[in-house]
Length: 192
Image (cartoon, rainbow, N blue to C red; front, side, top):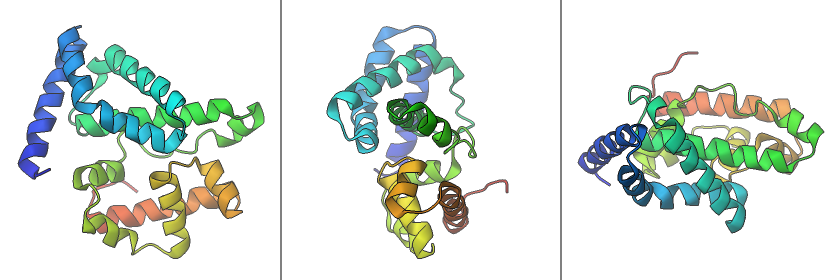
């Protein structure tokens, strides 16, 4: 998708969200048609179960219907907002399947970043361009493994911890440090 196409898509999706906020069903239908494949694909990568992924995708669009008025284009693109909702909903689904103690330990795995993660916004904007791949190459090997497992592998921080046999706080630190390096490499503005 070219920059012009992406800009046109952002304008279109922003307008559709405004109409959805006013209760327009045809706008919701159009928004769903334009975005559902990407949302379902991201949810499926996290959940790895088609049935749960379909249910979770439906929940995401119910959330869109109920919260479209909360979208702020100053915070990020409509697609980034939607993917953030979907990712959080999918991770919540994973957590809800865990036992109570595991769920409590997993709480906050992604709570340190803001509602529109600047790195997610930039990666969504650039797609899988060589810039993103090159920037992943600037991370240490352990940072790269943890970031790739969490963001491309769809694992929760606890699952990354278990997969790598590393303490959960260590995984969180590696991911945080890796995302900071990615932000710097991609030229994304951030606080801290």
